Image 1 (cartoon, rainbow, N blue to C red):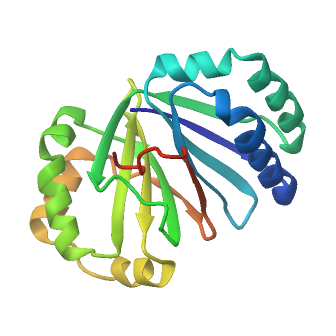
Image 2: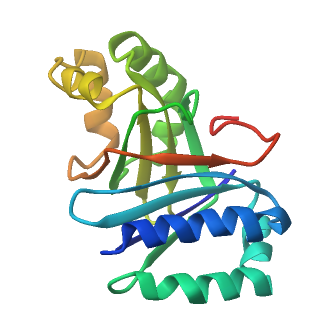
Length: 206
């Protein structure tokens, strides 16, 4: 799987959401390898999109289409300033990888100290989380070559997520997380996320 993260501030959320709906109706039918996306705004107007493609090549082919370029030219003015793009084809899935049924999503950015250990312990970490934090449906972790990661975590709902945050992490998991992550993460809370999945395609985790 290939993931592209798009992030930028916008004071025109309704217009931006409508533009994404136009993309789905008019541009998506010809998008090679597009699987779906998770979208939302933070309370202070930060837009975040986590878009999934089958491969990097498919994403590049989509970007090269005239229809995609024309659509983006109409969307770029809806942002208040520069837009960040992060392209990642090193993607890890936690639990079920995510769900279009999530009621709350967090996008977490940080740095991994030991990417190889993260890969090798993903199943173990997922199993512990599944037992301790049942409100976490799943997550995707997009790794960049410099060790930066962007994790998109799907929760059943925000109330359950906040309650889960108050639980003490098991010592084993706390030690593993401390070894792998820098501890300097930033969080974007998407209180009202929405999702798109290719017709007849797979859910986020598959």
